[in-house]
Image: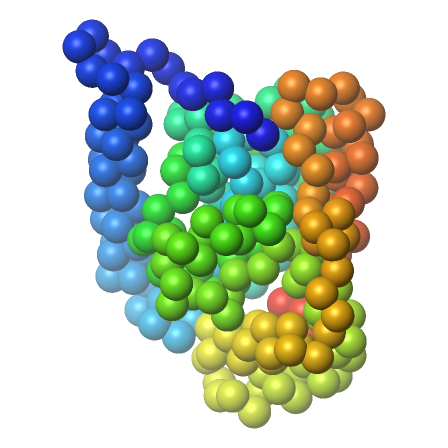
Length: 242
C-alpha cells in the first residue's frame, strides 16, 4: 500500500517531523497502557497472551485480521493491530468494515478502530506478531530483532503450522509450563523452528494482497487469502491454551 500520509502537518513543521512527533507520542501512550495493563492484571506476567497484526496503513488488512481474531479468540487472548506507515487516527476503510462485519466481527470493534503506528512497546508485549507481507515482517524484525521467532506473515504462520496436529501442539504447549503465555510461546517457537525444514515459497504464497484504493473484488480476494490463515491461527491458539 502506498503511504499517502495522514492529516497535514502543523504550520512550519515538515511532514517527517510531524510524523516523528506523532510516533513519539504514541510510543509513550502504548508504553503507558502496557504498564497499566500489567499493573491492573495480576495474571499479566504469565496470563493473557497478546496477538498483534501488522500491515501498512492499519486501515484495511491488519484491522480486519484484528477484529476477526478478537471475535473468535477474545476470551483467550488480547488482539491489537498497527501499521508500519499508519494513517494515524483513521478508521477502517468502508470496504474493510463491511467485510469484517460480514465475517463475524463485533460492530463495536469495527467502529472503534483508529489506526496507529507499529512501535516497540506493542511488539514487546506481544506473544505472536502476524504481518500481512514479507516486507512488513522484515520491517517488524528490524524494529525489534529480539522478537524474530514471534514474527510471521499470517499466511506463513498457517503454512508452517499445518504440519503440526492439534494434539502435538497441546503436548508442546503443556510441556512448557502452566501459564497461558508460556504455553502459547512454546507453540509459536515450535512453529518458527519449522522454517528450517520447510521449503521457502514465493512472496505470492506468503503475502496478503493490498486492497487499498482497489475494487471490492480485490478486497474480497485479499480476505480470501487471509481468512483461512486466521482459522489456522485460531486452531493453534485454542490447542495451545486448551
